[in-house]
Amino acid sequence: MILAQDIVSLTDFARQTRKHTADLKKHGRPRVLTHNGRASAIVLSVETYEQLLHDAEEHRLDLRLQKALNDYARGQRGTAATKAFQTIHARAVKRRAGK
Image (cartoon, rainbow, N blue to C red; front, top):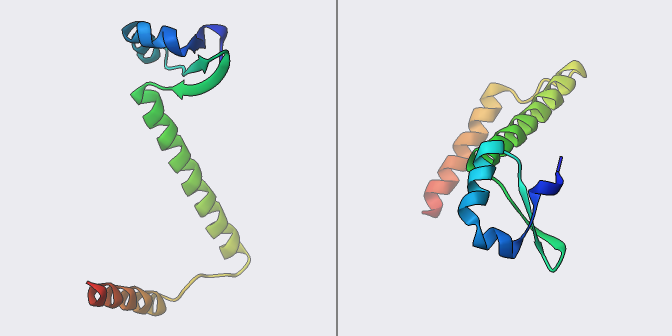
């Protein structure tokens, strides 16, 4: 949720960078920077950004796992290990040959 105190002009952010970055770290909420009254950028603390990346990766992995479980439930058992290893080996040989 973006609150009114999270919207700051680019000029104000530039003039009071230390204050705004301290607030970012303390509250963990993003800052919306405006230019000529229109939103132009979002600034996050490092911790908030890392949490966002972590959550996105977790979601991506959850979707892959759910797809695999659904495939398995429909009888699609994936690739046999011998075929998978042959494919991996062929890719490795091709990569080595390209170097």
